[in-house]
Length: 225
Image 1: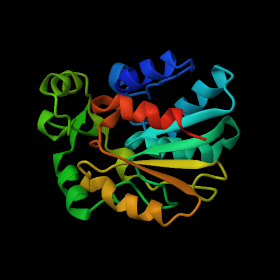
Image 2: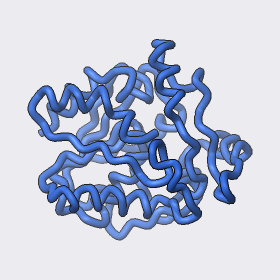
Image 3: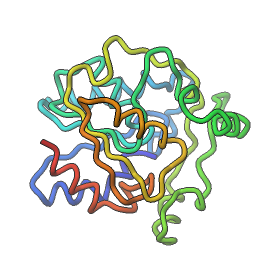
């Protein structure tokens, strides 16, 4: 996915008077032509921090959904001064030395690795079939599917490097999609609920809630303390 996936939530936040930035990382979505062997979690972090710095942003509510939650977590690890609050939507809390594939159910990681292919010499994961998007509206699911691009495998297998505890002192909210629960994220729900400093907010929506349930997501973001 790319910045386009935030279209519906961003519209609602802007209507409420907020300024919203939805950067796309190099190698993905409309920047798919920039895919290279250098595309990694760290290049995504660099792109996110560049967006914050180039637009002179401070005191932001930094929001990451799914894979983007890893990048948001790494941004506050590297540069916490930009964010007043970190919101993770149905993603993982990064751990130092652990890859994404190292924290999700092994059988899911193994299946995804078997699906890996190459584009111009770069190993990638093919994008999800339309039936696995957990979006009930078929037209919306098809619209979403048409815009997906392959994702660099390196982002899932590279060990994550943290220099500070999760959140790095930035207040955190975790929005958990519980209807239905996404198997890749379900284990993180329990872990987060055991973290006393994290505000836990379950919503009745599927994993791709930013597309399928923008009203619920926008309401939660507008209620961030």
